[in-house]
Image: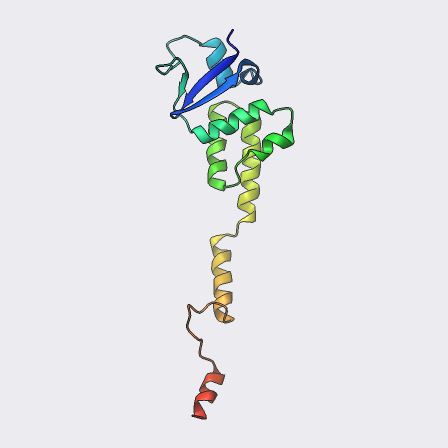
Length: 153
């Protein structure tokens, strides 16, 4: 059995090992490599690499998860911090049948979105700034004092 396994994911080439891919025997990667290798269901590119028409950025994170599964703190550093990327990783982890990674991404996504202010909160903050004179688009706000200043002229 070849030790190195190559993947063409969305046009980007990845290499991994048998040991990494076999970490989760319920994952789709394991199934493709060990149960369907050479079958008509497996797509290969011109160089014989597994072709997967998915997001390459998320796939890199998935490989890091499989590589670093015993060092939980290390692989979590590889998770994206942006909600959009986390949402995509959640879908990709679901597709590749990696529920633990999906759950971690969902938990981090919930944490990120809970920390972000809602649109209503942002509008409230903007109105507060406007009424307190903190946001005036470069114009000076007129106050009663302005009227008194003009009376002396």
